[in-house]
Length: 214
Ligand code: PRP
Image (tube, rainbow, N blue to C red):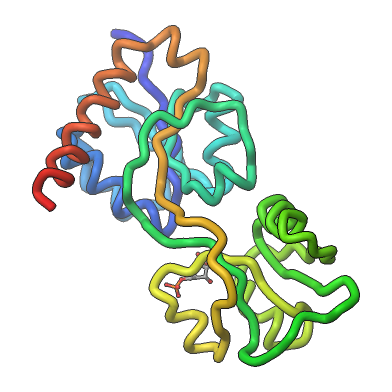
């Protein structure tokens, strides 16, 4: 039996949509896939091994070749800038990156503070705007920052917009649209091209079907 193909899957909000897409593409994922604390799940029927990782870490596993392929948000790809191939836009988990803050407030004139989980993306964005800012890196609940006086603005993901509304914040600028991507380790793509192409084609089939139905 050939060695399994290793797939890095993001835990959390992308997971369900990603698993649904793989199932629709014909891959048999066991029920334990959806409700388990296991971090490594083998699927011998498909000769797959899944590693369940933090979304921000998926490109790291794929770049280092401990996973052959993975699913990562475009937000993560922009922030991490890893040496991996981005082979498919999976069109799932659509959201956007935005600048947000308290309503009717101007940014501080001198070195306004920007809180974010995406320090590289935020720094590049404000550099392009010609604004000198101080970036404050947080790991979650970013919306707290302007509410408690830690930052003038945040750069964060907006999906339904509920978190902003429920915390009395508004969106000031949209930075970029985000969807999840299928990413592949460059060496794996050469060595295991046949199997990886089969997967890419199976998923593309589902995506094309959905486009024609729209
Ligand atoms: C993300 C993001 C926002 C929220 C946006 O956080 O950072 O806080 O979702 O979603 P909404 O527009 O649908 O309300 P996540 O729940 O992933 O957790 P985090 O705060 O730990 O980053």
